[in-house]
Image 1: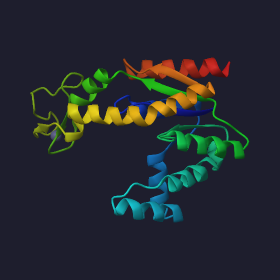
Image 2: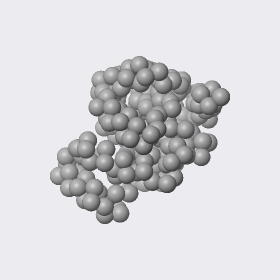
Image 3: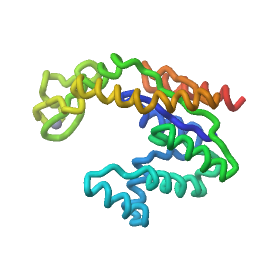
Length: 217
Ligand SMILES: [Zn+2]
């Protein structure tokens, strides 16, 4: 199967991508992994991307797209794949569609992990990070024995700027702006399926799998 996974920050997308790909025995292809592989492998595209990253610039779409194209041409992706982090916008979705058409294939499904904003804030704003060892705790889901102190090393816990409510709300707004058109694009193509991403990780995976099985039948 050829699947794209989309979802807001805090939806558990990385974890779900891994589980779903392993259930389906297809590779999980994330832009982060592709970047790292190209940079550490010293490919031409990797050198190009590294130049932008070293200067603190965004890697241009064309470089990302070329890396995705190379990755999708590899052997292990011929029977299917799960894309995570690509496409990010409608322009990339159009390119992907054309790229796959060149290979004589198309996407089967786009799974959207659906979580409401307040739930994302509850998940992320409750995180506390240890200053000494970096371990991440959660005030509701995984609290340390003593408030503000790391069980593992006795270090002081703090809230990262990324985990502050206003930062999270801002990231969610940016996500909505970028992704809403992408979601409509795939809804128009008739391949979008929403998956309720609240509750335990395994239950979310099961919901995603039943959508995929329904498609395969
Ligand atoms: Zn610690």
